[in-house]
Length: 389
Image (tube, rainbow, N blue to C red):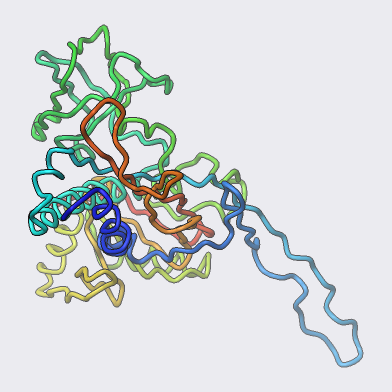
């Protein structure tokens, strides 16, 4: 007979490993490429010491002359706070009781919840990889009728999400918190919210939208690496912290990409091993080669994904990569530092499923404390302003 204890045991012994593998390796090709490690985690922070430049005590001389003068290497400490990543499922008491005498129905119930969790988590964690840690998805352009809100972009929003809003200065808008997205009009960049009426007086133009309570709590993604702001508590006054950026390039070409890769390797000693771009940029690259009667080959990469092969480097299109943008990355410089891998939150009695106070439903929550860190921003590149196809 199926009971709450049966469900608890299934979540612990069977589903945890499967869900962990799916979230780590199937969420996103870039995430699958990045190494996960518990190294350099100190308390609630990630602290990594990296060398600036080369050791200066190297030289050549005569047989009887002075030996090279030693030169102490300079170091900088990168510091970032571990982010709290959660995924919660909900099962009603009625659903559990209705499948009490039918193990097949119970398995289907859990499978459905796990698949839903994986799909939602994969979408959001994939989006975080391209953010700056602020959690901002888009800005408010205007507010229309029928609880509709027009945004600068809807690429990071899906139906069913719970979203919140804050002012342009970052102050939470208490009137528009945890609203469910009922529908998304991507052509008009418009979303429709549930709840009380949303008017221009309630939600000002220029406000920001983010996923429920995520404002300022997401992992540090690529946008932060290629901004001018300090990163990992270090300013940008050293060349090691400044990535390669070329903007306003227009038409894409093989020479454009190869020149950027060569420049990064020449200046930073970093060998690019992964390229990610928007769908339009990928189409433009394919079209460029087609004009020269060349078809780019494909290659298999980590996680079972397929990518274009650009001179031995995989090229992957991602839905969250900004329009007209291509990132040239050395993934060896990236680490997902984590206190532990995905785990279920357990109560004092070891239970995973917990009843929601005053409601006939049970919830279970997956948690991971982690932060993405790039130890050599100078070894990464970004090409923007590419004409999309």
